[in-house]
Image (cartoon, rainbow over the protein chains, first blue to last red):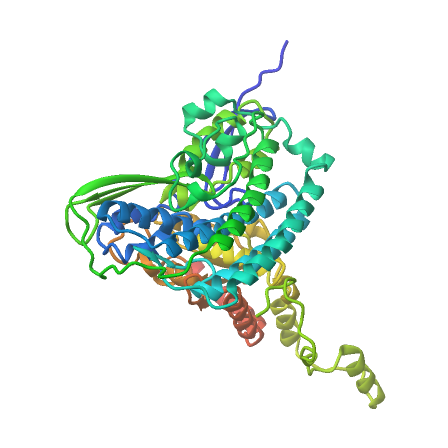
Length: 367
Length: 205
Protein backbone atom coordinates (compact mmCIF):
# COMPACT_ATOMS: atom_id res chain seq x y z
CA UNK A 1 0.00 0.00 0.00
CA UNK A 2 1.40 3.37 -0.96
CA UNK A 3 1.93 6.05 1.66
CA UNK A 4 -0.54 8.87 1.56
CA UNK A 5 1.15 12.21 0.85
CA UNK A 6 -0.22 15.69 0.77
CA UNK A 7 0.97 19.10 -0.27
CA UNK A 8 2.45 21.49 2.25
CA UNK A 9 1.87 25.23 2.24
CA UNK A 10 4.88 27.17 3.48
CA UNK A 11 4.90 30.84 4.31
CA UNK A 12 8.09 32.77 3.52
CA UNK A 13 8.35 36.33 4.73
CA UNK A 14 7.49 39.17 5.03
CA UNK A 15 10.40 39.14 7.47
CA UNK A 16 12.99 36.94 5.84
CA UNK A 17 16.68 37.78 5.38
CA UNK A 18 16.63 36.80 1.71
CA UNK A 19 13.45 38.30 0.32
CA UNK A 20 15.17 41.67 -0.24
CA UNK A 21 12.54 43.67 1.55
CA UNK A 22 9.07 42.85 2.70
CA UNK A 23 7.77 40.26 0.26
CA UNK A 24 5.66 37.32 1.32
CA UNK A 25 5.83 34.14 -0.71
CA UNK A 26 3.25 31.42 -0.25
CA UNK A 27 5.05 28.30 -1.44
CA UNK A 28 3.17 25.07 -2.07
CA UNK A 29 5.48 22.10 -1.69
CA UNK A 30 5.28 18.46 -2.64
CA UNK A 31 8.03 17.03 -0.47
CA UNK A 32 10.96 19.19 -1.43
CA UNK A 33 9.65 20.18 -4.86
CA UNK A 34 7.87 23.42 -5.51
CA UNK A 35 4.39 23.02 -6.93
CA UNK A 36 3.37 26.65 -6.88
CA UNK A 37 4.59 30.03 -5.65
CA UNK A 38 2.26 32.92 -5.02
CA UNK A 39 3.82 36.27 -4.11
CA UNK A 40 1.83 38.45 -1.72
CA UNK A 41 2.74 42.09 -2.19
CA UNK A 42 1.62 45.40 -0.74
CA UNK A 43 3.67 45.44 2.44
CA UNK A 44 5.49 48.58 1.29
CA UNK A 45 2.71 50.36 -0.56
CA UNK A 46 3.52 54.02 -0.01
CA UNK A 47 0.70 55.53 -2.14
CA UNK A 48 3.23 57.70 -3.93
CA UNK A 49 1.13 57.95 -7.09
CA UNK A 50 -1.69 59.52 -5.11
CA UNK A 51 0.67 61.83 -3.23
CA UNK A 52 2.10 63.15 -6.48
CA UNK A 53 -1.33 64.54 -7.36
CA UNK A 54 -1.10 66.88 -4.38
CA UNK A 55 2.41 68.22 -4.99
CA UNK A 56 3.80 70.75 -7.43
CA UNK A 57 5.64 69.39 -10.44
CA UNK A 58 8.91 70.61 -8.95
CA UNK A 59 8.26 69.07 -5.52
CA UNK A 60 7.53 65.65 -6.96
CA UNK A 61 11.17 65.14 -7.92
CA UNK A 62 12.18 64.39 -4.34
CA UNK A 63 9.11 62.20 -3.92
CA UNK A 64 10.20 60.14 -6.93
CA UNK A 65 13.44 59.41 -5.05
CA UNK A 66 11.77 57.90 -2.05
CA UNK A 67 8.44 56.53 -3.17
CA UNK A 68 9.71 54.64 -6.19
CA UNK A 69 12.67 52.28 -6.38
CA UNK A 70 15.08 53.54 -3.74
CA UNK A 71 18.19 51.88 -5.14
CA UNK A 72 18.01 53.88 -8.37
CA UNK A 73 16.93 57.30 -7.15
CA UNK A 74 18.58 59.11 -10.06
CA UNK A 75 16.83 57.01 -12.68
CA UNK A 76 13.47 57.65 -11.03
CA UNK A 77 14.14 61.37 -11.20
CA UNK A 78 15.22 60.89 -14.80
CA UNK A 79 11.98 59.28 -15.92
CA UNK A 80 9.79 61.72 -14.00
CA UNK A 81 11.62 64.84 -15.22
CA UNK A 82 11.67 63.47 -18.75
CA UNK A 83 7.90 62.98 -18.67
CA UNK A 84 7.25 66.53 -17.43
CA UNK A 85 9.67 67.99 -19.96
CA UNK A 86 8.02 66.10 -22.81
CA UNK A 87 4.59 67.30 -21.69
CA UNK A 88 5.56 70.92 -21.16
CA UNK A 89 7.96 71.08 -24.10
CA UNK A 90 11.00 72.11 -22.07
CA UNK A 91 14.36 71.84 -23.81
CA UNK A 92 17.23 70.58 -21.65
CA UNK A 93 20.64 72.12 -22.39
CA UNK A 94 23.26 69.85 -23.92
CA UNK A 95 25.46 69.79 -20.82
CA UNK A 96 22.52 68.84 -18.61
CA UNK A 97 21.69 65.91 -20.85
CA UNK A 98 25.24 64.60 -20.76
CA UNK A 99 25.41 64.97 -16.98
CA UNK A 100 22.13 63.04 -16.71
CA UNK A 101 23.58 60.18 -18.71
CA UNK A 102 26.68 60.10 -16.50
CA UNK A 103 24.63 59.97 -13.32
CA UNK A 104 22.17 57.43 -14.73
CA UNK A 105 24.95 55.04 -15.55
CA UNK A 106 26.80 55.54 -12.25
CA UNK A 107 23.51 54.81 -10.52
CA UNK A 108 23.13 51.65 -12.57
CA UNK A 109 26.59 50.56 -11.41
CA UNK A 110 25.68 51.23 -7.78
CA UNK A 111 22.42 49.33 -8.10
CA UNK A 112 23.99 46.30 -9.77
CA UNK A 113 26.67 46.26 -7.08
CA UNK A 114 24.03 46.05 -4.35
CA UNK A 115 22.31 43.29 -6.30
CA UNK A 116 25.51 41.27 -6.76
CA UNK A 117 26.51 41.71 -3.13
CA UNK A 118 23.18 40.68 -1.64
CA UNK A 119 22.72 37.82 -4.07
CA UNK A 120 26.20 36.63 -3.18
CA UNK A 121 25.31 36.64 0.49
CA UNK A 122 22.11 34.71 -0.28
CA UNK A 123 24.16 32.04 -2.01
CA UNK A 124 26.71 31.95 0.81
CA UNK A 125 29.50 34.08 -0.69
CA UNK A 126 30.15 36.76 1.91
CA UNK A 127 33.27 38.05 0.18
CA UNK A 128 31.29 39.36 -2.77
CA UNK A 129 29.06 41.38 -0.45
CA UNK A 130 32.01 43.10 1.20
CA UNK A 131 33.76 43.79 -2.09
CA UNK A 132 30.68 45.15 -3.82
CA UNK A 133 29.84 47.48 -0.98
CA UNK A 134 33.42 48.74 -0.96
CA UNK A 135 33.10 49.86 -4.57
CA UNK A 136 29.58 51.16 -4.01
CA UNK A 137 30.79 53.46 -1.25
CA UNK A 138 33.17 55.05 -3.76
CA UNK A 139 30.31 55.75 -6.16
CA UNK A 140 28.26 57.20 -3.31
CA UNK A 141 31.19 59.45 -2.43
CA UNK A 142 31.22 60.70 -6.01
CA UNK A 143 27.48 61.40 -5.75
CA UNK A 144 27.88 63.08 -2.40
CA UNK A 145 30.46 65.52 -3.73
CA UNK A 146 27.96 66.79 -6.30
CA UNK A 147 24.53 66.35 -4.75
CA UNK A 148 25.18 66.21 -1.01
CA UNK A 149 23.19 63.02 -0.61
CA UNK A 150 24.12 59.37 -0.55
CA UNK A 151 20.85 57.72 -1.46
CA UNK A 152 18.29 60.40 -2.21
CA UNK A 153 19.65 63.23 -4.27
CA UNK A 154 16.94 65.40 -5.86
CA UNK A 155 19.68 66.30 -8.33
CA UNK A 156 17.74 66.06 -11.56
CA UNK A 157 15.44 69.03 -11.90
CA UNK A 158 12.84 69.80 -14.51
CA UNK A 159 14.91 71.41 -17.26
CA UNK A 160 18.28 69.89 -16.45
CA UNK A 161 20.33 69.10 -13.39
CA UNK A 162 20.67 71.13 -10.21
CA UNK A 163 24.28 72.21 -10.34
CA UNK A 164 27.59 71.67 -12.12
CA UNK A 165 29.95 69.13 -10.54
CA UNK A 166 32.78 70.72 -8.54
CA UNK A 167 36.17 71.20 -10.27
CA UNK A 168 38.24 68.03 -10.48
CA UNK A 169 35.19 65.79 -10.16
CA UNK A 170 35.43 64.38 -13.69
CA UNK A 171 39.03 63.30 -13.06
CA UNK A 172 37.92 61.49 -9.93
CA UNK A 173 35.26 59.64 -11.91
CA UNK A 174 37.86 58.63 -14.49
CA UNK A 175 40.17 57.37 -11.76
CA UNK A 176 37.32 55.44 -10.21
CA UNK A 177 36.42 53.84 -13.54
CA UNK A 178 40.02 52.73 -14.08
CA UNK A 179 39.95 51.13 -10.66
CA UNK A 180 36.50 49.67 -11.22
CA UNK A 181 37.38 47.88 -14.47
CA UNK A 182 39.82 45.63 -12.62
CA UNK A 183 37.28 44.98 -9.88
CA UNK A 184 34.67 43.73 -12.37
CA UNK A 185 37.25 41.29 -13.68
CA UNK A 186 37.80 40.21 -10.08
CA UNK A 187 34.10 39.46 -9.53
CA UNK A 188 34.13 37.60 -12.81
CA UNK A 189 37.09 35.48 -11.71
CA UNK A 190 35.62 34.91 -8.26
CA UNK A 191 32.19 33.74 -9.37
CA UNK A 192 31.97 32.74 -13.04
CA UNK A 193 34.20 29.68 -12.71
CA UNK A 194 33.29 28.88 -9.11
CA UNK A 195 31.88 25.32 -9.06
CA UNK A 196 29.58 25.94 -6.07
CA UNK A 197 28.20 29.09 -7.65
CA UNK A 198 27.69 27.29 -10.96
CA UNK A 199 25.88 24.42 -9.28
CA UNK A 200 23.50 26.83 -7.59
CA UNK A 201 22.78 28.96 -10.64
CA UNK A 202 23.45 27.24 -13.97
CA UNK A 203 20.26 25.82 -15.46
CA UNK A 204 18.28 26.89 -12.39
CA UNK A 205 15.08 28.91 -12.70
CA UNK A 206 14.79 28.77 -16.47
CA UNK A 207 12.17 30.87 -18.23
CA UNK A 208 11.99 30.76 -22.01
CA UNK A 209 11.53 33.70 -24.33
CA UNK A 210 7.84 33.18 -25.06
CA UNK A 211 6.91 33.01 -21.38
CA UNK A 212 9.11 35.98 -20.53
CA UNK A 213 7.33 38.07 -23.16
CA UNK A 214 3.94 36.89 -21.94
CA UNK A 215 4.78 37.88 -18.35
CA UNK A 216 6.08 41.29 -19.39
CA UNK A 217 9.62 40.69 -18.19
CA UNK A 218 12.06 43.39 -19.17
CA UNK A 219 15.56 44.56 -18.40
CA UNK A 220 18.22 42.02 -17.44
CA UNK A 221 15.58 39.34 -16.75
CA UNK A 222 14.18 39.68 -20.26
CA UNK A 223 17.59 39.96 -21.90
CA UNK A 224 18.77 36.77 -20.19
CA UNK A 225 15.84 34.98 -21.86
CA UNK A 226 16.64 36.27 -25.32
CA UNK A 227 14.45 39.40 -25.51
CA UNK A 228 16.91 41.60 -27.38
CA UNK A 229 15.53 44.96 -26.38
CA UNK A 230 16.87 47.95 -24.54
CA UNK A 231 14.99 51.25 -24.32
CA UNK A 232 18.30 53.09 -24.59
CA UNK A 233 18.66 51.61 -28.09
CA UNK A 234 15.12 51.40 -29.43
CA UNK A 235 13.78 54.69 -28.04
CA UNK A 236 16.87 56.68 -27.10
CA UNK A 237 16.33 59.42 -24.56
CA UNK A 238 18.79 62.14 -23.50
CA UNK A 239 21.96 61.51 -25.49
CA UNK A 240 22.01 57.71 -25.56
CA UNK A 241 21.77 57.77 -29.36
CA UNK A 242 25.29 59.24 -29.49
CA UNK A 243 26.80 56.66 -27.14
CA UNK A 244 28.44 53.49 -28.42
CA UNK A 245 27.62 50.53 -26.23
CA UNK A 246 26.57 46.90 -26.58
CA UNK A 247 23.48 45.30 -25.12
CA UNK A 248 24.29 41.86 -23.70
CA UNK A 249 21.67 39.23 -24.60
CA UNK A 250 21.69 35.58 -23.58
CA UNK A 251 19.23 32.86 -24.51
CA UNK A 252 19.61 30.41 -21.62
CA UNK A 253 17.11 32.20 -19.38
CA UNK A 254 18.57 30.79 -16.14
CA UNK A 255 20.01 32.50 -13.04
CA UNK A 256 23.51 32.30 -14.45
CA UNK A 257 22.47 34.12 -17.64
CA UNK A 258 20.87 36.89 -15.59
CA UNK A 259 24.09 37.21 -13.62
CA UNK A 260 26.16 37.43 -16.79
CA UNK A 261 23.86 40.06 -18.30
CA UNK A 262 24.28 42.30 -15.27
CA UNK A 263 28.04 41.77 -15.11
CA UNK A 264 28.37 42.76 -18.74
CA UNK A 265 26.06 45.74 -18.17
CA UNK A 266 28.46 47.00 -15.53
CA UNK A 267 31.28 47.02 -18.09
CA UNK A 268 29.07 48.75 -20.65
CA UNK A 269 27.94 51.38 -18.12
CA UNK A 270 31.55 52.20 -17.36
CA UNK A 271 32.12 52.53 -21.12
CA UNK A 272 29.17 54.94 -21.49
CA UNK A 273 30.35 57.10 -18.58
CA UNK A 274 33.82 57.35 -20.17
CA UNK A 275 32.37 58.49 -23.49
CA UNK A 276 30.04 61.00 -21.86
CA UNK A 277 32.89 62.46 -19.81
CA UNK A 278 35.01 62.77 -22.94
CA UNK A 279 32.31 64.54 -24.95
CA UNK A 280 30.94 66.61 -22.03
CA UNK A 281 30.16 70.05 -23.53
CA UNK A 282 30.34 73.37 -21.71
CA UNK A 283 27.57 75.85 -21.09
CA UNK A 284 24.49 75.88 -18.90
CA UNK A 285 23.35 72.68 -17.24
CA UNK A 286 19.78 73.76 -16.52
CA UNK A 287 17.03 75.56 -18.40
CA UNK A 288 15.12 78.26 -16.58
CA UNK A 289 11.89 76.79 -15.25
CA UNK A 290 9.67 78.69 -12.77
CA UNK A 291 9.06 77.00 -9.42
CA UNK A 292 5.29 76.93 -9.98
CA UNK A 293 5.44 75.76 -13.56
CA UNK A 294 2.26 74.63 -15.25
CA UNK A 295 2.06 71.87 -17.82
CA UNK A 296 -0.42 72.24 -20.66
CA UNK A 297 -3.50 70.03 -20.77
CA UNK A 298 -2.63 66.61 -22.13
CA UNK A 299 -1.05 63.28 -21.42
CA UNK A 300 2.27 61.63 -22.09
CA UNK A 301 3.88 58.23 -21.62
CA UNK A 302 7.65 57.98 -21.51
CA UNK A 303 9.87 55.05 -20.73
CA UNK A 304 13.49 54.63 -19.81
CA UNK A 305 15.80 51.74 -19.17
CA UNK A 306 16.35 51.52 -15.44
CA UNK A 307 18.65 49.06 -13.74
CA UNK A 308 15.69 46.70 -13.34
CA UNK A 309 14.08 47.11 -16.73
CA UNK A 310 11.54 49.16 -18.60
CA UNK A 311 10.55 51.99 -16.25
CA UNK A 312 7.73 54.15 -17.50
CA UNK A 313 5.67 57.09 -16.33
CA UNK A 314 2.22 57.97 -17.62
CA UNK A 315 1.46 61.57 -16.78
CA UNK A 316 -1.88 63.35 -17.23
CA UNK A 317 -2.19 67.09 -16.80
CA UNK A 318 -5.33 69.21 -16.62
CA UNK A 319 -3.37 72.43 -17.06
CA UNK A 320 -2.80 72.98 -13.35
CA UNK A 321 0.51 73.31 -11.48
CA UNK A 322 0.08 69.78 -10.12
CA UNK A 323 -0.24 66.56 -12.13
CA UNK A 324 -3.75 65.19 -12.53
CA UNK A 325 -2.58 61.58 -12.52
CA UNK A 326 0.78 59.85 -12.38
CA UNK A 327 1.01 56.16 -13.18
CA UNK A 328 4.31 54.42 -12.74
CA UNK A 329 5.05 51.33 -14.78
CA UNK A 330 7.42 49.49 -12.49
CA UNK A 331 9.75 46.89 -13.99
CA UNK A 332 10.04 44.88 -10.76
CA UNK A 333 6.28 44.39 -10.68
CA UNK A 334 6.23 42.68 -14.08
CA UNK A 335 9.38 40.73 -13.35
CA UNK A 336 7.77 39.40 -10.18
CA UNK A 337 5.04 37.86 -12.35
CA UNK A 338 7.63 35.72 -14.03
CA UNK A 339 8.71 34.38 -10.64
CA UNK A 340 6.13 31.60 -10.27
CA UNK A 341 6.90 30.44 -13.79
CA UNK A 342 10.62 30.26 -12.98
CA UNK A 343 10.24 28.45 -9.67
CA UNK A 344 7.80 25.69 -10.60
CA UNK A 345 9.47 22.29 -10.39
CA UNK A 346 12.60 23.38 -8.56
CA UNK A 347 13.66 22.48 -5.03
CA UNK A 348 12.90 24.59 -1.99
CA UNK A 349 16.60 25.48 -1.69
CA UNK A 350 16.51 27.15 -5.11
CA UNK A 351 13.83 29.64 -4.08
CA UNK A 352 16.43 32.02 -2.69
CA UNK A 353 18.72 31.76 -5.70
CA UNK A 354 15.89 32.40 -8.17
CA UNK A 355 14.30 35.19 -6.16
CA UNK A 356 17.62 36.99 -5.80
CA UNK A 357 18.41 36.63 -9.49
CA UNK A 358 15.42 38.68 -10.69
CA UNK A 359 16.57 41.61 -8.55
CA UNK A 360 13.29 42.96 -7.28
CA UNK A 361 13.04 45.97 -5.04
CA UNK A 362 9.80 45.93 -3.09
CA UNK A 363 9.49 49.68 -3.12
CA UNK A 364 9.32 49.43 -6.89
CA UNK A 365 6.78 46.61 -6.82
CA UNK A 366 4.38 48.27 -4.38
CA UNK A 367 4.98 52.00 -4.96
CA UNK B 1 37.28 62.37 2.27
CA UNK B 2 39.36 60.30 -0.10
CA UNK B 3 37.53 57.77 -2.19
CA UNK B 4 39.00 54.65 -0.69
CA UNK B 5 41.67 52.99 -2.76
CA UNK B 6 41.58 55.43 -5.63
CA UNK B 7 43.48 58.30 -4.08
CA UNK B 8 46.85 57.49 -2.57
CA UNK B 9 47.54 59.40 0.64
CA UNK B 10 49.51 62.55 -0.20
CA UNK B 11 53.11 62.76 1.02
CA UNK B 12 53.90 64.83 4.08
CA UNK B 13 50.60 64.35 5.88
CA UNK B 14 50.80 63.36 9.55
CA UNK B 15 50.08 59.77 10.51
CA UNK B 16 46.40 58.98 11.21
CA UNK B 17 45.37 59.74 14.78
CA UNK B 18 45.49 56.75 17.13
CA UNK B 19 43.35 56.07 20.15
CA UNK B 20 44.64 57.72 23.34
CA UNK B 21 43.40 54.92 25.57
CA UNK B 22 46.31 52.76 26.72
CA UNK B 23 46.33 49.32 25.12
CA UNK B 24 44.97 46.54 27.32
CA UNK B 25 48.32 44.77 27.78
CA UNK B 26 49.89 47.99 29.01
CA UNK B 27 47.02 48.61 31.45
CA UNK B 28 47.27 45.08 32.84
CA UNK B 29 51.02 45.53 33.36
CA UNK B 30 50.46 48.75 35.34
CA UNK B 31 47.71 47.19 37.45
CA UNK B 32 49.74 44.06 38.17
CA UNK B 33 52.66 46.11 39.53
CA UNK B 34 50.38 47.64 42.20
CA UNK B 35 49.74 45.67 45.41
CA UNK B 36 46.40 43.93 44.89
CA UNK B 37 46.10 45.60 41.51
CA UNK B 38 45.19 42.39 39.71
CA UNK B 39 41.86 42.43 41.52
CA UNK B 40 39.06 44.56 40.06
CA UNK B 41 35.96 45.27 42.12
CA UNK B 42 32.65 45.98 40.42
CA UNK B 43 28.98 45.24 40.85
CA UNK B 44 27.42 42.24 39.18
CA UNK B 45 25.03 44.58 37.45
CA UNK B 46 27.76 46.78 35.98
CA UNK B 47 29.65 43.76 34.67
CA UNK B 48 26.46 42.30 33.23
CA UNK B 49 25.45 45.56 31.61
CA UNK B 50 28.93 46.01 30.16
CA UNK B 51 28.61 42.62 28.54
CA UNK B 52 25.10 43.27 27.29
CA UNK B 53 26.00 46.63 25.81
CA UNK B 54 29.00 45.22 24.00
CA UNK B 55 27.08 42.45 22.25
CA UNK B 56 23.92 43.94 20.83
CA UNK B 57 22.54 41.60 18.22
CA UNK B 58 20.08 43.31 15.91
CA UNK B 59 17.42 41.59 13.85
CA UNK B 60 18.14 41.66 10.11
CA UNK B 61 14.97 43.44 9.28
CA UNK B 62 14.81 46.01 6.54
CA UNK B 63 11.69 47.78 5.41
CA UNK B 64 12.77 50.40 2.86
CA UNK B 65 15.58 52.78 1.88
CA UNK B 66 17.06 53.01 5.38
CA UNK B 67 17.74 49.27 5.22
CA UNK B 68 20.24 49.94 2.45
CA UNK B 69 22.10 52.37 4.70
CA UNK B 70 21.86 49.81 7.50
CA UNK B 71 23.46 47.26 5.17
CA UNK B 72 26.14 49.80 4.32
CA UNK B 73 26.77 50.22 8.06
CA UNK B 74 27.33 46.47 8.36
CA UNK B 75 29.53 46.34 5.25
CA UNK B 76 33.14 47.12 4.47
CA UNK B 77 33.68 50.78 5.25
CA UNK B 78 31.68 51.25 8.45
CA UNK B 79 31.86 47.70 9.81
CA UNK B 80 29.46 47.58 12.75
CA UNK B 81 30.92 44.21 13.80
CA UNK B 82 33.65 46.03 15.66
CA UNK B 83 30.99 47.34 18.10
CA UNK B 84 29.84 43.78 18.77
CA UNK B 85 26.78 44.35 16.61
CA UNK B 86 26.20 41.18 14.62
CA UNK B 87 22.98 40.83 12.62
CA UNK B 88 20.82 37.80 13.37
CA UNK B 89 18.22 36.48 10.98
CA UNK B 90 15.65 35.40 13.58
CA UNK B 91 13.92 37.44 16.31
CA UNK B 92 14.52 34.64 18.83
CA UNK B 93 18.24 35.39 18.88
CA UNK B 94 18.02 39.16 18.60
CA UNK B 95 17.85 41.77 21.32
CA UNK B 96 17.74 44.90 19.19
CA UNK B 97 15.32 45.76 16.43
CA UNK B 98 16.35 48.48 13.99
CA UNK B 99 13.14 49.62 12.32
CA UNK B 100 14.70 50.84 9.08
CA UNK B 101 12.21 52.49 6.79
CA UNK B 102 8.53 53.19 6.41
CA UNK B 103 6.05 50.77 7.90
CA UNK B 104 2.72 50.46 6.14
CA UNK B 105 -0.54 49.73 7.91
CA UNK B 106 -0.31 46.23 6.46
CA UNK B 107 3.20 45.75 7.88
CA UNK B 108 2.65 47.30 11.34
CA UNK B 109 1.07 44.23 13.01
CA UNK B 110 3.96 42.12 11.73
CA UNK B 111 6.51 44.53 13.22
CA UNK B 112 4.64 44.23 16.52
CA UNK B 113 4.63 40.43 16.33
CA UNK B 114 8.36 40.33 15.57
CA UNK B 115 8.98 42.57 18.57
CA UNK B 116 6.91 40.24 20.75
CA UNK B 117 8.94 37.27 19.53
CA UNK B 118 12.19 38.83 20.72
CA UNK B 119 13.38 37.74 24.19
CA UNK B 120 13.59 40.39 26.91
CA UNK B 121 15.42 42.67 27.50
CA UNK B 122 14.82 44.05 24.02
CA UNK B 123 15.45 47.43 22.47
CA UNK B 124 14.17 49.29 19.44
CA UNK B 125 15.95 51.89 17.32
CA UNK B 126 13.73 53.90 15.03
CA UNK B 127 15.90 54.68 12.02
CA UNK B 128 14.95 57.53 9.71
CA UNK B 129 12.11 60.00 9.44
CA UNK B 130 9.53 57.51 8.16
CA UNK B 131 9.89 55.19 11.14
CA UNK B 132 10.00 58.13 13.53
CA UNK B 133 6.99 60.13 12.38
CA UNK B 134 5.97 59.18 8.86
CA UNK B 135 8.54 61.54 7.34
CA UNK B 136 7.84 62.64 3.77
CA UNK B 137 4.78 60.37 3.75
CA UNK B 138 3.01 62.28 6.51
CA UNK B 139 0.54 64.30 4.42
CA UNK B 140 -1.93 63.11 1.76
CA UNK B 141 -1.15 59.51 2.45
CA UNK B 142 -3.43 56.61 3.21
CA UNK B 143 -1.10 53.67 3.69
CA UNK B 144 1.88 54.60 5.86
CA UNK B 145 1.94 54.35 9.66
CA UNK B 146 2.81 57.76 11.10
CA UNK B 147 5.56 56.65 13.44
CA UNK B 148 6.55 53.18 14.54
CA UNK B 149 6.22 54.24 18.20
CA UNK B 150 2.47 53.73 17.85
CA UNK B 151 3.20 50.01 17.63
CA UNK B 152 6.39 49.28 19.59
CA UNK B 153 8.20 51.27 22.31
CA UNK B 154 11.25 53.04 20.89
CA UNK B 155 14.51 53.62 22.81
CA UNK B 156 16.53 55.70 20.36
CA UNK B 157 15.39 57.81 17.40
CA UNK B 158 17.86 58.38 14.57
CA UNK B 159 16.82 61.30 12.35
CA UNK B 160 17.59 61.64 8.65
CA UNK B 161 16.19 60.66 5.28
CA UNK B 162 17.93 58.29 5.20
CA UNK B 163 20.39 58.68 8.09
CA UNK B 164 24.00 58.18 7.15
CA UNK B 165 25.65 55.01 8.47
CA UNK B 166 27.59 57.23 10.89
CA UNK B 167 24.29 58.43 12.32
CA UNK B 168 23.13 54.86 12.87
CA UNK B 169 26.41 54.05 14.61
CA UNK B 170 25.91 57.09 16.83
CA UNK B 171 22.43 55.83 17.66
CA UNK B 172 23.80 52.43 18.62
CA UNK B 173 26.47 54.06 20.81
CA UNK B 174 23.74 56.09 22.54
CA UNK B 175 21.79 52.90 23.16
CA UNK B 176 24.91 51.26 24.62
CA UNK B 177 25.30 54.17 27.04
CA UNK B 178 21.67 53.75 28.02
CA UNK B 179 22.09 50.02 28.62
CA UNK B 180 25.18 50.56 30.78
CA UNK B 181 23.17 52.79 33.14
CA UNK B 182 20.17 50.50 33.36
CA UNK B 183 19.28 48.97 36.79
CA UNK B 184 18.50 45.73 35.05
CA UNK B 185 18.88 43.20 37.89
CA UNK B 186 17.18 45.42 40.45
CA UNK B 187 14.23 45.91 38.14
CA UNK B 188 13.93 42.19 37.58
CA UNK B 189 14.10 41.50 41.31
CA UNK B 190 11.40 44.09 41.96
CA UNK B 191 9.18 42.55 39.30
CA UNK B 192 9.65 39.07 40.81
CA UNK B 193 8.83 40.38 44.28
CA UNK B 194 5.70 42.13 43.00
CA UNK B 195 4.57 38.95 41.29
CA UNK B 196 5.07 36.93 44.50
CA UNK B 197 3.10 39.37 46.67
CA UNK B 198 0.34 39.77 44.11
CA UNK B 199 -0.46 36.06 43.84
CA UNK B 200 -2.07 35.39 47.30
CA UNK B 201 -4.35 38.39 46.87
CA UNK B 202 -5.62 37.05 43.58
CA UNK B 203 -6.27 33.68 45.25
CA UNK B 204 -8.21 35.29 48.08
CA UNK B 205 -10.49 37.10 45.67
